[in-house]
Length: 342
Image 1 (cartoon, rainbow, N blue to C red):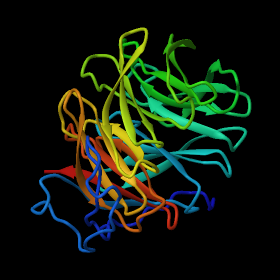
Image 2 (spheres, helix red, strand yellow):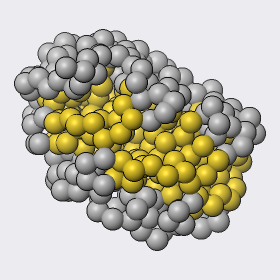
Image 3 (cartoon, helix red, strand yellow):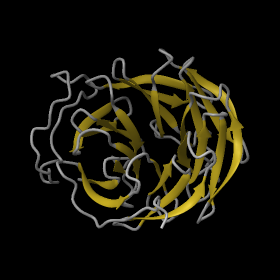
């Protein structure tokens, strides 16, 4: 059997969901991320809202995977796609409700150097992929045929390397587009999806130019996707509202400590505004920043153990109209669904 084949394990409970510290829309009083206060799991009765974790899969090899989330099966529940750079394989993990059932959908060439984002680029009911390769700046749409991804090139970006991309319906026409950010000059470009290509136009320039990370979602609550930018120099979080031809930025929060956060976006409150989840590796804390329309109000939803080296994606894995998270840990290849409860 191919050693890269995904192996599913039985579900079990995630260890060590415990307390931590966060700076909300103002900085935290203690100024750092405190160590967990306890090691026992927190239950729904102890937290007004939380992530309830259960293991859905184990991947092999354990390390080196990158995951994205979307409704790849087209059944209303979020699934995952895993990419491994050792052989360029792309695997869809279909969400059964208690596990991910993996099957290989594609192999990309060259095997390494790709990054992927997910969205409905074909404009139908199934999620597709966009792959970017920094070796030549090529951007490819992998259309979801139901059992495979069929790739076609939609763009080439210049310079070839250094870009990061997020996906969303920035044109508001029902098809996913992309936004590319380049740290050499802080430029943000919307690649509008024509159905066969991405047509790029510059929407903003951020300052300082380097070290931003971005997520996409409907933060303004209208029909167009917006972006959130996080900068580790001062922990600031900025919503870039999409006007149709530009991003207008406003600060929504400052997190503390300032550096080393990673964020994902989703509708965790279950309303029409996108929210964010922040993870900090110093203590494994996960915080939901609920979008009030002008700020993010943060509350801790979980602590993961071990604290460091997790990566997270967001999607409606429970199928209940609220976003959940999936956490992947490279020490043992485990994949955990954190369902939003409360």
